[in-house]
Length: 94
Image 1 (cartoon, rainbow, N blue to C red):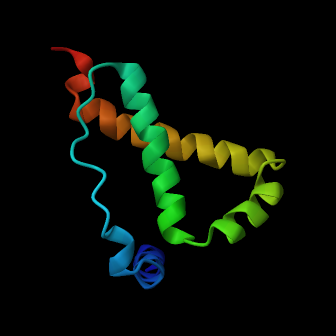
Image 2: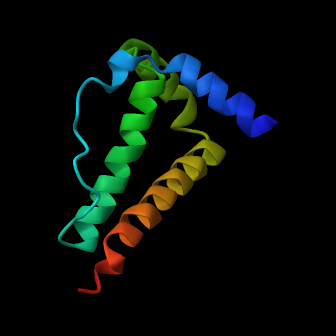
């Protein structure tokens, strides 16, 4: 039930206009470094889409940049995205 509520909340927050710009054309990258950079970008775009106000993002940044739990959560999100990118690249075993 909690996942359903979370999905509903995200759907309500994300307008179709938020997805108008097509920037993600592939998860394939040449190197693990590029893959990690893509994982960071995926994480940043997710924040931007859920909080479209740059002013509000700047305002709350001061709160989370000094909170160890929040910083760990950011690292976990990037790590999850990196796992996705790495799998899409067959872990760069080509």
